[in-house]
Amino acid sequence: MKTVFSVEDSLVVRNIIKQVLQSEGFNVLEAENGKQALEIINSKKPKVDIYILDVNMPEMDGITLLGEIRKFDTTTPVVMLTTETDKSKIMKAKGLGATGWIIKPFEREPFLKVIRMLLEKEG
Ligand SMILES: [Mg+2]
Image 1 (cartoon, helix red, strand yellow):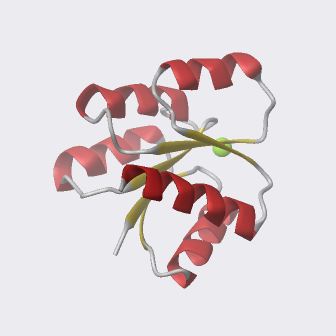
Image 2 (cartoon, rainbow, N blue to C red):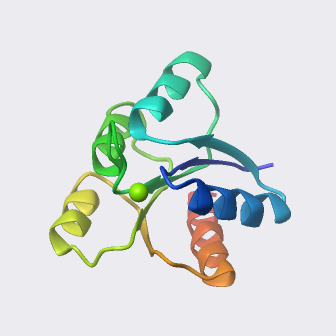
């Protein structure tokens, strides 16, 4: 079973992500900001197959969290979530090693397609 770590401050979006992924048989871990995610990573050392990181979050945003994750893990796919068309944030995330991008609001099937594609690429 593949494990997805979903880091998103919006409870509504977080629940949609969880529902969609669990209905497809994924194991879903969750945090509501980057700081909480790092605490979980450091304390529980979960095996994660793919990260989904919201860009805009309180405490620690998704770009910062991506940078922190890439310090110890350069291979696990990381998908960034945003509502924005902010080119500078997209370029920054790419530079830091983001492997995919999903614009909110997203539909179930295109969302799953991105997740599956990145997991297949990883092998
Ligand atoms: Mg947000």
